[in-house]
Amino acid sequence: TPPIQPFSISFGADNATLEPQGQVLTRRMSDLEGLFADGDAWARAVADGDPVVYTVVSSPVPEVPRELPQSITTIYPGETGGEFWMTKGHQHPDPQGEIYLGLDGHGGLLLFDGERAEWLEMRPGTIGYIPPSWAHRSINVGDEPYRFLAVYPGSAGHDYGWVVAHGMGLRARRASAPRTGNGDTTH
Ligand code: PAN
Ligand code: ZN
Image 1 (cartoon, rainbow, N blue to C red):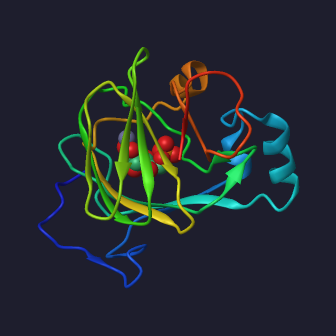
Image 2: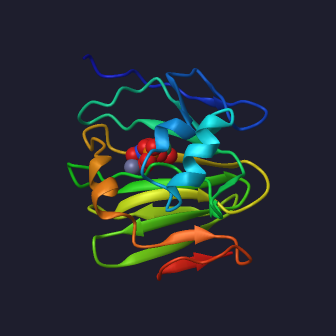
C-alpha cells in the first residue's frame, strides 16, 4: 500500500460522521454474544429486534504499519440485564498505545491488564490514554449517545478472543440495578 498523502477530515454536524469517510461498522446485540453477564437477557434482546448497540465510522486511513487510523464510535444508550451497553472490547496483539477523545455524552473507558481494572470517566473533551497491553472496552453510562474519537497505530491489530476468555475485571451497572457477583462498578 502506498503511504497516504496529507489530508484533513471534517466532523459531520452530529460528530458521528467523517468527511472523507472510510468503512462503517454496525454492531448489533447479536454480535455481543457471551459478553453480558445475563445471557438470558441478552438472548431476549436479540429476539426482540436485535438492536444496534454501537457503530464505528473509520477514516480512510488503512490499518497497515506506520499509518495512524482513526475512528468514531457511537454507543447508544441502553441496558441489558441491568448492564450498560458497551463495546465488545479487545486487546492489541502488537502492544501499542491508543488515544481516545470524548465527543458527546457520558461514557466510561474500562481498562484491564489481566489483574487490575481501571475506569476512566469520559466526557466531551476528555482525553483517555490506553497504555500498551491493556485490554479496553467503552461503556455508555448516560441517557444520550456516547461518542468518542479513537486514534491507534495501524499495525496494532485487534484481539477480541482475549476479552471473551478473561473478561474485563469490572461490569458497569446502574446503581439501582440488581447486583450479581463482585467487582461491579456503579453509576
Ligand atoms: C476503537 C474500537 C471501537 C469499537 O476504535 O475498535 O470503539 O470497539 P470494539 O473494537 O471493541 O468493538 C479501538 O479501540 N480501536 O483500537
Ligand atoms: Zn483499541
